[in-house]
Structures are given as C-alpha cells and as structure tokens.
Image (cartoon, rainbow, N blue to C red; front, top):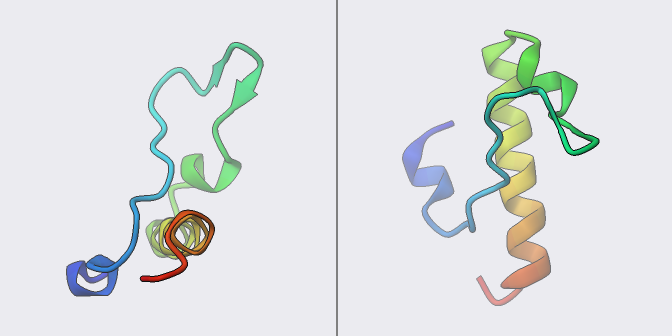
Length: 57
C-alpha cells in the first residue's frame, strides 16, 4: 500500500511471532507469503478500525 493512502487511517492490527499465542492465531493471510494480499488485508483492517474508532476521518 502507498503511504499516502494510509495517512488518514488508524493503523491496523500488528502481529508478530509466535503464530499462536494464548489461544489466539495470526490470520492465515499474514503467513501466506502473498505480499499483495497482505497489503490489501492491512489496508482493509486499517479502514475497519478507522470507521469503528474515528468515523469522522
């Protein structure tokens, strides 16, 4: 995703290792290796969070 595209969005969720932690799994898309799909997922998650927490943006 382009940096300018995300300028008015809240950052989406961030995941790290391990893939499973306290019963919570990292979304499969993030471990797929498909960089274009991962970028789309991140943008979608940022848009969802922004709409939920800052609908004024």
